[in-house]
Every structure is written in C-alpha cells, then in structure tokens.
Length: 140
Image 1 (cartoon, rainbow, N blue to C red):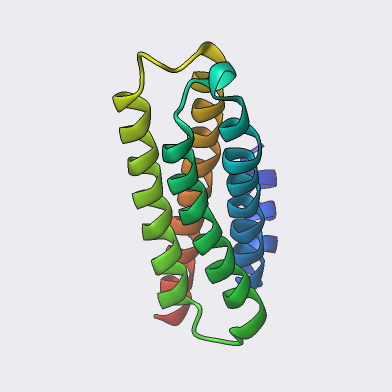
Image 2: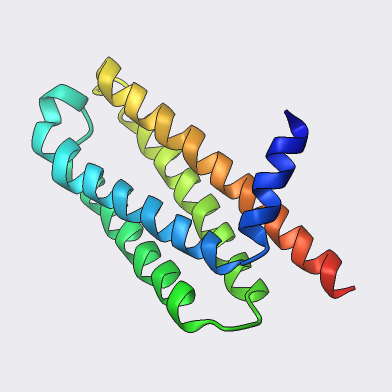
C-alpha cells in the first residue's frame, strides 16, 4: 500500500505543475460549493452566506493563483508552492474559526461538509509539504 502511495506521489511530483492544477481545481470546487450551493441553502447547512462568500472569494483567489502557476511557471516552483501551501493552511484555520464561531447555527449537513473540506484540504497541505520537501532534497 505504501509503495502505491509513493508511486502516485512520485508521478505527480515529477511534474510539480500538476500540483498547481490539482490545487486550482480543488479551490474552484470549494468556491463553487460555498457560493453556489451552501450560500443558497443557509437553512440546510447553517453557515451565514456572508461568511461563505468570504471563504468563496478566497478560494477564487487561490484558483487564479494556482491556475496561473500551472500555466505560466516553467521552473523555480518551490517559492510558489510554498506560498499556496501556507495560503491553504491559513484558509484552513479561517474555515475552522468560522465553524467554531457559527457552531450553534450549523446543521449536521454543514458540519459534514466542513469536515470533508477540512480532510481534503489537510490532505492537500500534507501533499504540498511533501512536494516542497522533495524539491528541497533534489536541489541539495
């Protein structure tokens, strides 16, 4: 199992541009779900639309950033990858803050959505950190 995981990781990190593509797609999906679905059904999820629009806007910024990195970077990915990894971590903490602040309003569906988003985002952050570490090790 670990060998399969390392093989998949190796294939994706062999071309770091793929990480930016994965990040941009994930950020786009988050923005779509937050603004397009959760905000329209506040009663079903419980998070106020104004908070969801803030999170969605941030996700849109990350989408554009990662998309631009994917298309325009040819080399020297490390600093740009560090930026998006840190930005994802900040987004994660902001989302957790909103969940804690609005916990009493959130429904089970809202909690499930944010738990899933948290799991996916943490997985992406770990993946990006491994890619950063791999890039650093290759350059030394």
